[in-house]
Amino acid sequence: MIEIRFHGRGGQGSVIASKILAKAFFMEGKYVSSFPYFGVERRGAPVTAFTRVDEKPIRARYQIYQPDYVVVLDPSLLKTVNVLNGLKKEGWILLNTLKSPAEVQRILKHDNIATVDATSIAIKHRLGSQAAPIVNTAVLGAFARMSSLVKIETVMEAIRQSAPAKREENALAAKDAYESVIMGGA
Amino acid sequence: MVKMILTGNESAAWGARVSRPKVVAAYPITPQTSIIETIAEFIANGEMDARYIRVESEHSAMAACIAAQNTGVRTFTATSSHGLTLMHELLIWASGARLPIVMSVVNRAMAPPWSVWTDQLDSMAQRDTGWMQMYAENNQEVLDSIIMAYKIGEKHHILLPTMVMEDAFILSHTSEGVDVPEQKTVDDFLGEYDPAFKLEPGDPAGFGSLIMPEGPYMEFRYKMALAMDAAREEIRKTTKEFGELFGRYYPGLVEEYHTEDADAIMLVLGTIGSTAKDVVDYLRSKGKKIGLARVRYFRPFPYEEIRALAKKTNMLGIVDRSYTFGYGANLYTESKGALYGHSDIPIKNYVMGLGGRDITPALLEKVFEDMLQISREGQVDREIEWVGLQGDKRWSV
Image (cartoon, rainbow over all chains, first blue to last red; front, side, top):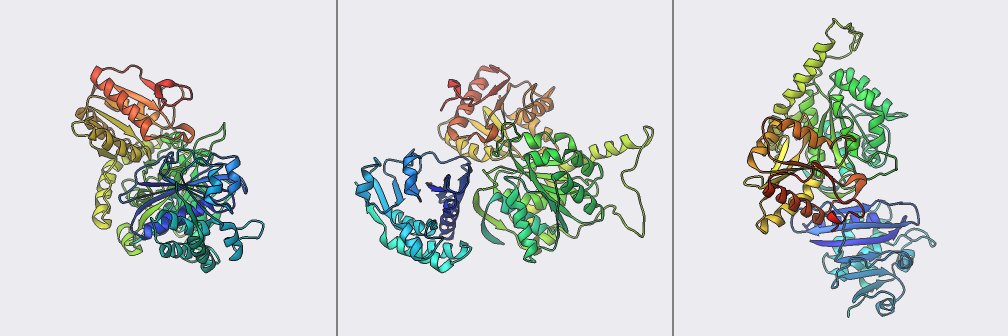
């Protein structure tokens, strides 16, 4: 079983991202389960969401404590949330940031770090506003590349089927992020 | 059949949609809201031919369902927690009027302190309302059980309403693959609603009028009791019939998992049973003979199944996600009552997961170990134990 944890802020679409990713895996024939940790899901407040993927039906009905992957939609969360909490040593963390993996490594003590400038990609495709871009779909494209667990074409199709508006723009944002994610392994 | 990714709440909405209720009356409450939002969307899009009545409270929602169902149509509603408890008076009316209304209940904790997370006190507090109670462990079971609830409740020798429970967030907001059955198959299974009686302007009748003590009030209640008893066989029959038509078999009132040759068996309600199956597999792989029984229907209570379980094993550990202040919790006290005079194996109540506190495999493993120890020793250390309290080293994992 693969376990993925998303960190974002209310309004960025972390919960939707966890659902779209589950849909993509589902479209590739996997069993999936995705769920939010329902906290104070107000705009701007930290939000956590989870996705599980397996080859067999998923019976686990509890939170994810030792994820294989962590995805951070908002770099400012690093100051308030321990995003590495429980992440497996060989696991990967993906951050939406302008910084390179090597630069992030100075703050986050972890081997496998990937970064992508999802904010610029979202603004380029006019997703959300300049001040509050919606980065969730871009981040999923980067996840596809980082994890190699799901095809980018499937992620794009899952986005097209799920996005309430700007379907093609959202799918293209994922593709841009897929192509521009930087991976730094130790 | 179409396979979709649905939350528990969307599954409930789909279960309602394919059952074709003519009236849906509901009031929103976290975490039930997306059930009635989804239904409102179905109706607005013309995908569901029903009248949606917006009401000012859950009390009114149930009142509207009662009135509508009395005119001879299927109705549906959904609620949770404080909404359900506000309905309490009308719940008893609905069952007393013998109206087979179906309602989704998202099990959520009662305040204070405020908590929107899962806990089964809300529905347990409705135990005596004359409603059937079904507790689901996954989204597919939520959808399928709503369809079956109409089928069972509408039988003229039953005529009782049903609430179908799903754990807050653990199901209500969790997305997973669900088979949405074809409308035609559901139509074939359910058939047209055939009310045993209804309000007709051309054929006036009075419902629910005053009955003097020497009148048949007591007989009305006795008939309800008989109907609820008869529902056990109807549930077993219907789950089988459903399986034959839809290819998904549900095990009547209680689902058993590795109960054969078990030294101890855990009884649970709802999603705890799902996680616990993984724990049973793990402990069985280590040679520990444990088993699990997931009680699907709490009303009518499966006393025969529980007596049969006690004959198979040396110990029953009963997990409740709610508490009856004063003595134990409902699944425990009812199971113990059913077993009096039929079994003298040790029984222990584990109270856990209140207010949405996470029930992890590690914690369940500890409970199973405790059960095995009691099984070996032949007696319980204490009748009732709260598991996983902050600072309690005994259960720290």
